[in-house]
Length: 248
Image (cartoon, rainbow, N blue to C red; front, side, top):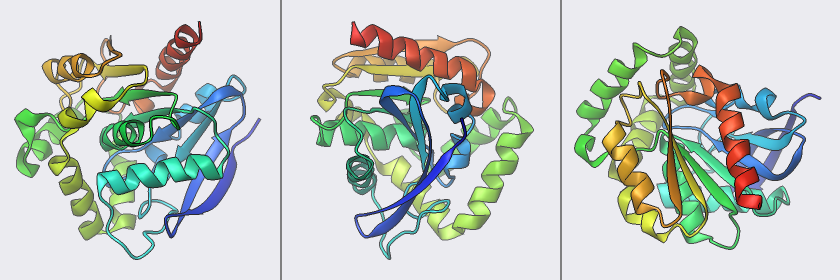
């Protein structure tokens, strides 16, 4: 059916997104620190024609501009919800990967009447690794299990964003306390983790699911952190099954 590109001005920044048609509620895919919607793009063909899905570029990354400001995780959450309003999305499912999980959790907590459900794929940041050196070691270890294309696309995104913006996004991820936000997320929530994910270890994923009032955990055998690249079809099916169960 093909992918539609849109650009909407939210919170003073031009925010780009790519979407495919399907049933609602729509799934809005949010990328991780320092990268762009390229990280989530493989999911769109997996949803195309079945579930409406979007991959957004957060302000300052990919094809979205920063609007002349520095963005905190709560700022990004507010911009994301404003973008859903601009697109006319009703009770969307917000799906985040890595830093994207922190953004969608904040969005759900801050705007409970505007978010239908959340999916946290490889949530960050594990309190046991709340330093940039530890995060870097885990990321490098995890990359041993990722497809080479994941590293290639990440390096391209880092180059386009520039080192200062990339470091600021990593710092924002490190400093944001997801564990304090999760108890305030009232929506149905699914935590998804690959069993080979070295950025989001199993005990931390279990803590995330436990802290969510309506959370549950799915561990996918054999997959690393970037689930949207490692197995987009499997992740899409997990999300669609979650949405179908919540609709009953």
